[in-house]
Figure: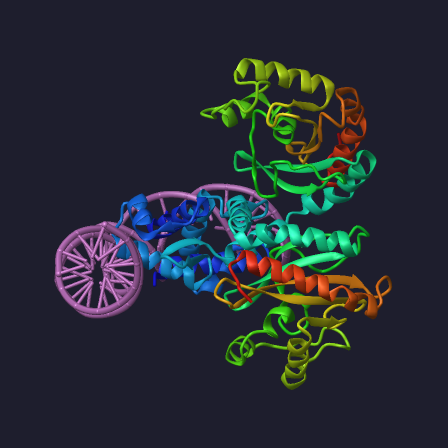
Length: 247
Length: 247
DNA sequence: CTGCGTAATGCGTTATGCGCAACACGCTTG
DNA sequence: CAAGCGTGTTGCGCATAACGCATTACGCAG
C-alpha cells in the first residue's frame, strides 16, 4: 500500500462531501499544511480538484468526466436500458437500476416517470440497504452469509414510520420477498413513495443488481403497484439472461 | 508535485479509457510491475478501480459515486435546471448545459426531448470546441486571447461535411454569433442535428457556460430553430442573473 | 496595528516508495 | 506433458522522493 496515494484518495473522499479548506484537510489527514498542499497541487494539475474563490477546494472536472465515463463502460447498464424503458412505457412510473458495488448498492441508471415527481434518488447515489426498493431487491436474494457481511455494522436508520429498524423484522421481510420473487418498499425510505423490485443475476448466477419501479401512493395504490410485479420480474429475468444467466 | 500521486492519477485517466491489464499499465507509466500493482491495490482498496475477471482493471464505484456527487455540488447546474425545463417545454427539443472547465467544455446537464432521438451527447462528456452547439456558444463569446489559448494545439477534426476546419472560418462564424447574440451548429458535429446556443455569464461577467437547443433537421427546419433563439437567450440571461450577473 | 489562515519556497532527514529477484499460480501453446 | 507467458505475492537493499519545519509573503478581519 502506498501511503501517499492512500492519503490523496482520502482527500478526494473528504472533499467530495463538501468543499474544504487546507486547514481542514491537513488536520483530517494528520499531516503538515505543506504536505496537504502538495497533494492538492498535484490533484489540481490533473483536474481532480478545483480551487474555489476563497481558498476552498472541491472535486474537479476530471472527477466527473471519468465518473461518467466509467458508468458508460458498465455493460449491465446498457443491457438493462431497453427493459427499463419498456417498464416505464408500461407503467408510466420511474424505473431504477441499482447495482451492488463494493458492499454498497448504487443507482446506476434511471428512467424518469412521465409525471415528474420529486424523488430523492439520482444516478451515482447510494441506496440504503434496509429501506430502498432497489437495495432490498438485491439483498433479500443474497445468501445469508452475504447478508450478514453487508449488514454487519450497518446502521439501520429510521427514515419513516414504516422503516424496518430491526434486523429480525428485515429478515422476515426478506424471506417474504424471496417467497414472492420480488421485494417491496412500503414507504420505508420516503413517505408517500412505494416500490417493487426484482433481482438481476449475473452469468454465474449471483445476484448483482435489481430493477425497481417507484411510484407515489397518491397516484398508484398498492394493488396497482403489485400488478406491475410480473412484468418487472420478466424484465429482470430478461436482463439476467442477457448476462448469461440460465435460471 | 508528488510523483507517486502523479502516476496514480495517470492510471485513473488511462484506465478510464478502457479496462487495462497490469502489463499495459506498467509499460504506460514506465515503471516496474510491482510498482504498478502497488498503486492498483491502493486504488482498489478505496474503490477507485475494480478488478474484472481476467486480470484487467477498470474504474470503480468510488469513481462514479464521487463523480456524480461533485456534479451535485455545482450550483450552476441546479440554477439552470428550471430554465432548461421551460425551454424543453416550449420547444419539445433536447436542451443542454455545457460548462467551461479546465480548458474543455463538458456537458453538465441535459433535458431530453419528448421525441426520443439518439444523440451522441451525455452528461460528463466533452463537447468539441469547434463544432458543437454548447461549446461554440461559449467560445464565440470569449475574448480573443482566451480563444487563442483554448484553440492553440486543438485539432479541428472534420466531423461532417459542414464542419468548419479552418480557424479563420471559425472566427468568422464566432463574429457572426456575437453579432446575433447566439451561436449556431449547422450539422457541424452530427449529420442531421442542428443547434442554437447562448452564453451564460458568471457574476464577474465572464462567459462560463452555455445553454443549447438541439433538434433533428427532419423535424425542425432552420427557421423554426432560429425562432427559438429569443427564448434561449432569455433563459441564458436569467441563469446569468441568478449567478449575480448584471448585463 | 495585530492576528489568523493560506501560499510558496528551501532544506535536512528519513521514511517510504522503488526496482529487482525469486517463487507460485493459472492459462495457453507446442 | 512440458514449456512459456502474464500475473500475483513477498522480501530486501538502496536511494529517491516525500515529509515536516521554518521562513516569508499575502490578504482579510477585527
